[in-house]
View (spheres, rainbow, N blue to C red):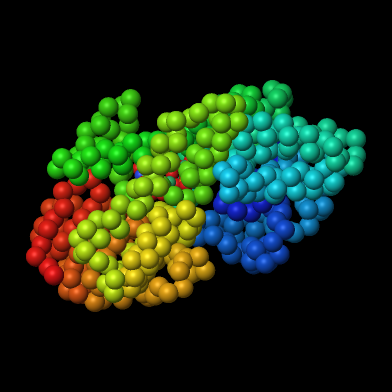
Length: 442
Ligand code: UDX
């Protein structure tokens, strides 16, 4: 029969918090441990520190049912656990390698506090070979005579639909040394009813990096096709649709735009290039994918410069700051690059995002202004840049764009509108990989 387990999770970022809430939802008793007191206090009060659809409700429901709790006390948190998940951050060092400090701290805390045999599940993205190192760190610091097994269970969830993805994933990958440990982790996840693939730890580590690198490659590929479409007068929307009809290609991740951002693709692609370099393999293809992406983030500003000659003093509305819709995450967002360039060009920038402004303010240049609404940002603007395809932006009436702006010139980095729709209005429109619609402003 199926039995709920006592699970502890260290690290309450996206991965840890979503995993914790979802494991509690399927019946387990979950304790989430984090060193950040303020964050733990917030979660104890039933609030999610991140904007994520459905997460707060799931937290509150399972806290009330006493299946989910939060603590800064790692000792109490780990003592009785059957399984401990490591879900701390693995950010990128300036040289492209992975910063494993938080993982090391987690390993030491586990070693200090466990009092019985335990399985440690690493959810954090770890470079190939690192799980063996985690195991060694724990073993070296163990205070008691207990057995610790390490299992790698990489996370594939997307921000913004993380809870949905946990219950509807395509696969759960379990990399383990022993079949017994793998079977325990499979059992834990059984109620999610997602297909499980069991393999060894090395392979599981590689699956995670290769998957993200492949998706990033698809995006850079279609962005290059878009750039060529612009030159020959083709429409990348039609091209990617036609390509996607081939099942071997598939229609996902063929949306041209201003490039990928977020906490995974930029970091994982450069980590894989590094990892390859470490074994004397020059991963040329992936290096190009990264180069194409960096270039892609700047193309909209180039288009605007060409259009206006100089951007100095132009009032430019930025619509959307988050790296993608339905999240307030600003990590590696294209808006960072675009706004930095616009400020260099001495444009007067006014930015709007439905959810990300609070997180954006501390990292964007202090000289820019923020609009409380789409209307406010667009009012009297000389041009608008669409950087995130929020529904609110896609549904905003084009007749209002036309009447609010000083000159309704849109640079749409996410191809939010059909060209047919734009043609019904007196709007000049430059998107990615599609013919521009020109008007006689200025
Ligand atoms: C991604 C992976 O999808 C997930 O499996 C992994 O665990 C973490 O990284 P996430 O970063 O949440 O998830 O976002 P995703 O929806 O994959 O988008 C990543 C970036 O690619 C965004 O900036 C998005 O705008 C961009 N993108 C995506 C495109 O430009 N075109 C596309 O067709 C798809």
